[in-house]
Length: 256
Ligand SMILES: Nc1ncnc2c1ncn2[C@@H]1O[C@H](COP(=O)(O)OP(=O)(O)OP(=O)(O)O)[C@@H](O)[C@H]1O
Image (cartoon, protein in one colour):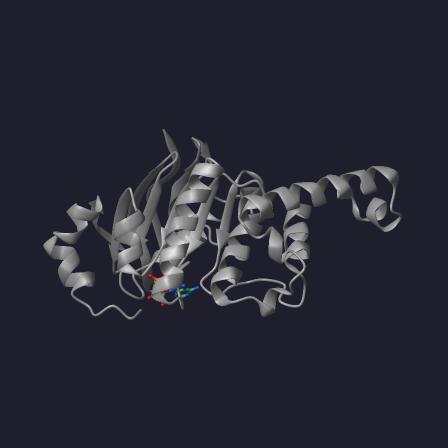
């Protein structure tokens, strides 16, 4: 069953066609990678999926519902969460507070009831705190819940960013270069982490990544973009042996 479908999407900025004729199908429960050289159009594709850009033409479907032209907020509420190349955390807040803030997206109380600390708000806040603790526990981060985010090692910050995305109850997780800046050990740990959360939270994962070891190890399916066009799709073995991919991408020295 298809969770995410990108149907013939084109995104043009003035004279630049960032993605063209893009067709991608991400099946439920799979880990799917989008790779390609710098400037190939990967981030643009994520921005179209998450509603940051309205595509010039074509459509995006989430569980068969058309989400093109919905606002990023609405798309998050429908169950897509995203992490960014540069980690975006509230660096001066604790791990727990970072999760609680993400959780707030799903809270029904309004500002007034929270400011007045109405009983139903307090009840909801207690519920959120418990839920956040359970989430951190499942992710192996409960032991660091009171640490300040900026004091964590890089790999843990990345995990916290993913935890924040999960706090919105997302079912489709978009990861934009999750292993960027990680050493080989951290990358190996992250590979396991992504697999585990996929299984634990019944997720579908779609990720942009440059670390070829991680991509080849973890992906059920890989899509390759070059100059905005899909040049290949398939399993790690199909992609490794595809001459167009080797020429466009794998022939280029890995920068990580
Ligand atoms: N808002 C924008 N306005 C104009 N051009 C843009 C915009 N966003 C992206 N582009 C152009 O679209 C093309 C694709 O860029 P994009 O950032 O999607 O590539 P990418 O594959 O994510 O690259 P990288 O791996 O370096 O992050 C590039 O030529 C880029 O300059």
